[in-house]
Image (cartoon, rainbow, N blue to C red; front, side, top):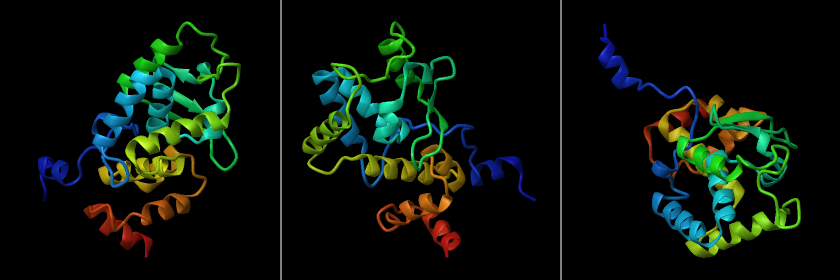
Length: 204
């Protein structure tokens, strides 16, 4: 019979909530060096663009969902963001890393709670504005940066830590675990990890 320490080493305890820790984010799609380069550049060029990019990497939110988010969807006390239901993606609550939660709070706490989280210059932010930010990010890294790739990177990040498929599905808002599984399988040859060996067995 295994003792408790042996069990903990074999099955490491996972956090109760899935949280994207951008300071330790590393996948075959985006490296820690990539993120540091992006955030350093945008923080010095345009603070709101910096927050939008960091928000995308922290939540895996789609562009339509991003445009729907209001300040009141953000709860600083629980460091969580309520993502409204949109098209094929389900409504969900996402816990943010403490550091980023503080950045969002400093940015938004004096504003009207019913205001868009990231408004444009003349009211509502448009989809093309977010696409412009992602295009600049792509040029900076000299590789594609878009929402589907960011969502895939987040799925890989959590899978590599050993989180169950079902929890990753919930985080990303997929209505079926099949969608999450299909995205992960695309990268099984790039992301070398023992969990992928187990995943292929389960997917068979």
